[in-house]
Image 1: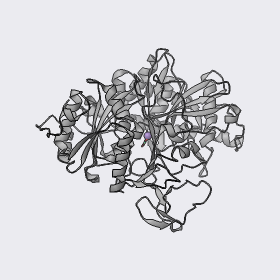
Image 2: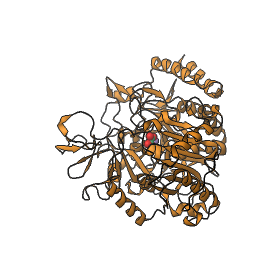
Image 3: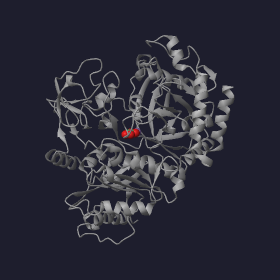
Image 4: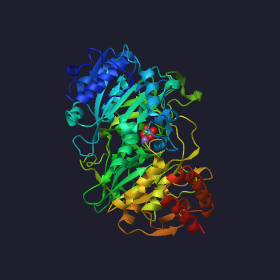
Length: 605
Ligand code: OXD
Ligand code: MN
């Protein structure tokens, strides 16, 4: 495999296979190729050990990449401040470089692969001079699982190395899994000089390769996550008949011990981590939720005919602001120690702080140093102290609600899939799809208000099919067709649902959300087992009055009814908006989805 085939490059003397811990010839050749182009001072192969971690941390503390936090209030945790121009995913600078433009489809930016490589070649030329080139072998999925896949990230960022060590199974284990001729997805990354004008996150789906330049932000730089586990893996999944999805995974246990596994697609920063780590207010009634994953699911049909899912990640890269004991105690406990915080604020005693941390209580500090490093009086107002997309990076093992099944080799059997978004109106609290194709229609037409997870305007409604708009590595119309086709090939398919925790009335949320969302999950659990009453509405099935578990819910049945309402006037408008959305896909729109729209209109009358 030659990354930059056009133009000869000569590997420098230090980049010989003998310096490498592997006899994997293609891997050694590729690393040598990267080194020849980028001209680092050193090449370092990461082994994933504790000693390596400690050395890197010491180096990052010395050069200011990391700032030590208070060992009492945040033991083993560090703060990283990114360049203020580099705080989120950059969708405008993210490219699918498929051979044919049509394969990228109308929802992706496309660059012709040769043109992209020429551009990248210029940017990478000598960009690691004076720096170390780190080779990160990593596994997405449990070590040794037949569902796992190996990636190699070459980077010049020690922050990326430390973060990949948390987010993936990294180092020697990955090289062992790869052997001397295993397949891997190559990824080359450099922060370059962080010039936003020269920022390119490029994917070459046919070569399963990622090349990312000019950003150190997680979604652009931790190549195992969005780039491999979603954009490249979605193409692999299409080719091989499985699914790579932007979904949380959770385990719901009923009082009788029966378990339901649920996957949930929500756009970025719409509460996936909160739902995955939900604390059930009905725990004392026997209903509990445990976490399997909070962002990505790889799913394939198992021998029993069900869909089985793994979480390919080993940690959480979550949005910090709003995380409190009230909203997500499990996340708060997860990040009590051993966490890399990026772009949060810090108190004078070195305790990390963010908007919403104190819940209903007031901020205990008079002064805070904001995410840009400016010490300000907390009463001064002005910009938030923590960036709205500030993040925590923490190992899954630190999560108190982690399911004992979270790294089962074969994954967990999926009973339900949820599609959710942030919408002020139209979409009810919970809706059951009439059948598989109707569920795919719901996924394909998901709308949600934009958030700070990507650069650009926030709070505007956009269609984000399957929460995959920024992550699907091929033509979205073909992706819909893949979902439709898969329905026919799963003998025992999961039930499909939509949810909307964010519906508003007079500017206020109708539903309390957070832990109380378990009530919608319980209704799903019942529906999957042929119980739980439902009302047929033109949009799908909603819980019949009295069939949602209401014990301890502090709101009136009338308010719940309004949260569940399917308003025909809103849905007429929705149908028109869906028609407009579908028009983008031209003749790639599967006829089954056009038919679903016709059926929706017919049901509306
Ligand atoms: C994420 C995202 O970081 O979706 O998970 O942006
Ligand atoms: Mn995400």
